[in-house]
Length: 498
Image (cartoon, rainbow, N blue to C red; front, side, top):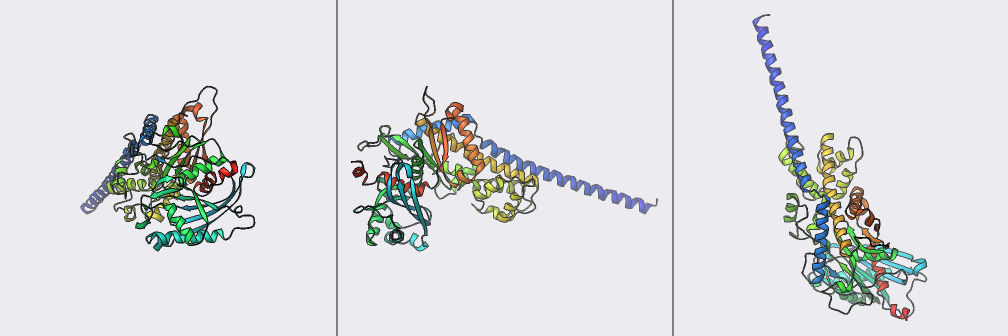
């Protein structure tokens, strides 16, 4: 072999070696980055841990805070609001009742005909009306006039046999899902608007008074019999179908719970004790916080950057508004510190709340062998393509960590309520059922969340007690529940009973 050939061979071998070295270095770099990404994920999983012992501490803390909130106003982060609902539906209710459900940019009007124990809900009709944006920031009169006019039009469509008895006023249950300081069953002053509303002259006013004046202005003779929020509506709807219902929990975009308390167990109640001996308490449990909650740096950053820093801590780790956002924040860290999606951080991944909980749920429930749902969600929402199966599996794992923590903590909250009511033990010879009415999109549509929550309840309560605790889906509490509460607080009840 000539010198030239030898030289060429040496050069060629060197080039091959260099190329091989580059490949090795690239692989090492990639495996190093992958290891870093997995380290971020494992550290997050560790901090989100919810072993039984920790969950029992959370449940105990919930019970303690419930006692404190009932003892005095401002005694706890849990507001434990007195709802003035002292009569829940029994199933005996009869007659025509209306409901108005105002909870966001739409409102619903409902007409319900109740037929007593045998016939229950004989007829139900409803219409949905959207609120023009200018009315959400205009004047109180303009908003309530618009609502009253829609209600009057709906009433005008009453069919044959759907009129109130002669000489009787129509009665309405009003679901108003904004913060209100309730002053009676049918009055409450608006504390502040949320959800895009900003009407200064309504703040501090009685919202029932505002609606009543508007109904008079449009010539509608109707009385508001009950002012409630959606959680209490869910409790009423649940109790109507099942007399063993003791509490209601909403697990949706937001979260809350309400339950039936003995009136004597409310030290801050200074009025006459209700005849029923009971009072429904609106816990506002989204604001619960405890040193036992497994909070991570991602949760703390989300809270600091939120519209209400320091508030609604429990809601920020268990509700549908935030779960997808927590997943996004962890993915962003993996992209920034471990090039999880390549050398460039995907710009869309930097947009807060772009990854919504329904997207997360779809990825979490992906059963295809190549996780193609995960791939298509990343492409459609975050404009991330070319993900490997290994990466997709890591993302499903991340969704599972976030959902499982939320589900297990919501179960711990429910156990806190059960403990407060002394229903966490089975007494000899007693076969009492305790039914929790649940509603909300997270509970209804996020199957893995629901299954995890229900299995955690059994884990925390033990086999014997968990046989007496039942979770039931109670649909449309905010609508039909309000009409049922109008019925159970009707001004004509005394007449019928007498």
